[in-house]
Image 1 (tube, rainbow, N blue to C red):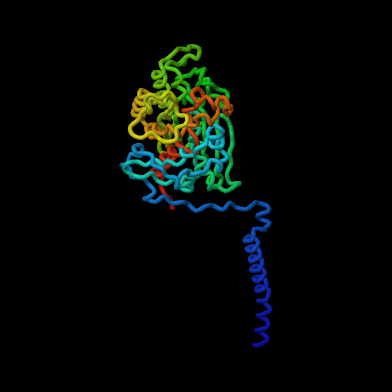
Image 2: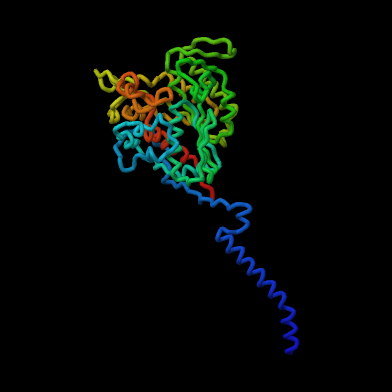
Length: 411
């Protein structure tokens, strides 16, 4: 019996030895993988650590019956601003009012409070999860560019260094959160349709020539984008008439601005209907951003503008800079579309914010104002563009609320 046991052990010994070698090797491989020093990582690179999905809860969503656009501005220096001006490296000089010398920061501390509900608290991680493997693009003029910069500033702080990028590819700007494969983009198109003002930096509102039935050049860059946010207003309103073509590019005629705007929006609507997949893409249109060029509108008898204003307008107010005929045209065009476009009517809530423009603490023709120009706010104050942080952040809070509404959690 002893001889048989010895023979059996001798026959099993190579198998046991091989098993120990396999287990030992596996343990070494596991330990090296765990420590991150494996030759596998050296050769192929370390795998990306994926974030857990963020779930959108019922309480995150707004009540569908609530009108987010009717409300009031309330002082909130605890929760606002949602980010600090000096913490966001993607802001252009046109919007960095504190850095440019504005002495007060009160404009940053007002929160929009709808009458019948609350705006969902902006959560950058939830937004990035909504945008995972998607593209969000803002299309329009420099006012829309500020909304793009605002959105980038709202999310960029939660994206680690090395996991984000920012690229200028005129007429586009592109912020990418690599971990989410999500991009937030901006596309310069001040009239939405094509014009001689489509160069991202070399343009002037003084010379306007719009091609009312041409949009395909722009449209190629918009195709397949998951969330499109359009805006177009200020460039149309420089004068009551505008030079434009329809059909032949050689046939330049002078149009009434409202007539030209309607034709341009119909061209845009035709492009949407022929190109957009409503099951895969969402389209938003921002209403006009108001101006505050004449202080007599909110302070009868005065002769200034938005310069040196520190508080919102209280009570009912609608300025002459917001054209009701344009609003009616937009309403009619959107109503006639065969696909759904969500109209974000931010005009009234922004009308109250005479205090939040860049005034003399921004740029003029690409340069900061001189000391002499700042001393002449009546002629040089910018009452069109907004400081950041500021009013465009609220526009993005509202956009975020609508994106939350339509988001579906996936297990």
